[in-house]
Length: 77
Image (cartoon, rainbow, N blue to C red; front, side, top):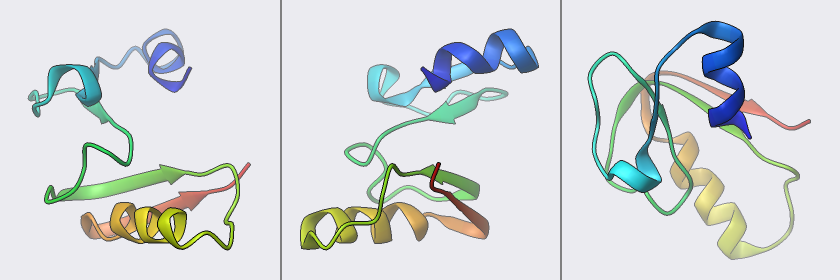
């Protein structure tokens, strides 16, 4: 959904990292919680449906939020 909207609205190239399994220069890196462990980015925008009491979901959220070395944003619609 997000990876399909961005090119049309912002005209940015999107790297679906869960498919490519690598960083591609001059693209927006879109991933999921299974493909960001051990990676670092200057900026991270994390979109979550809710924050639940589940330990595994909270651990995954923590891992995603700590991937940025400059700024992280958490969006909960």
